[in-house]
Length: 316
Image 1 (cartoon, rainbow, N blue to C red):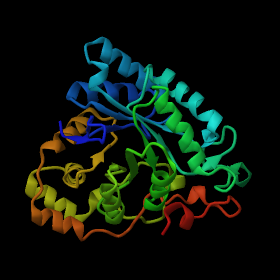
Image 2: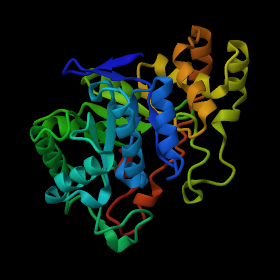
Image 3: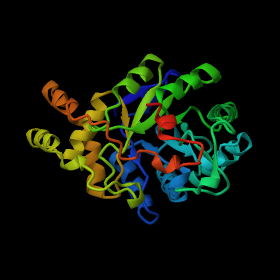
């Protein structure tokens, strides 16, 4: 299994199973099958609403002989638990759901804070603006989780280079990871370069284009990455699927990647993409596909009056 090497020296499996949009009743079987196939990296989040079922699958896998130290489990702090006093209880709840004593990696899901039990899309009055509750205050509470032994590493999700720089300057613990949307239509080369210079690793979410995401997050007539002619042509030449080409591309860039599936055949097929090697010509062809096209543009976090904007969120 290909691995990233963190500053601590610990290896993190680069190919993981994503669990966003995996419904209860499906995610248990998906995690069990993934571990049976060979995955050791499972990506979770409180907001996905399925951590308890993931935890059941993890517990049964470990009871069957998989060692805890063989697994890399990531989860994320949701936006409604950004007050410093709420961070450790939120992590404790995630650990109870996952039936674990600690996480390998805990990420701030978005640098956006909301009130109460709000999920998404929240009403304007449910937002807590960045001046009232800066993400750096939340980060300090996440650092305390590391000191308490509840998370071995911490990082961001949907963080721009500028926001990562702020964490580097103001935090005690440097972010180990930034998990961001990353695929040939959104290649984020400048962000990846920044992270490499500062020893921060990158995980690619929605590497296949996330065509199954909720309708509220979709645009009209958006391009389908899995149907891109250039990707299809490379897949044909490699005797691979388009999904395998997209996963292999992410691995070639030395990022981690977390394709989601609940289909047994595709779970195995995605895992086998780790053995696919793309040529320099393939990589150049894929490099031409960049459109700076976000499938998850963050607009639900930036309605007028919320205190946030897309310009603030992405620093673009």
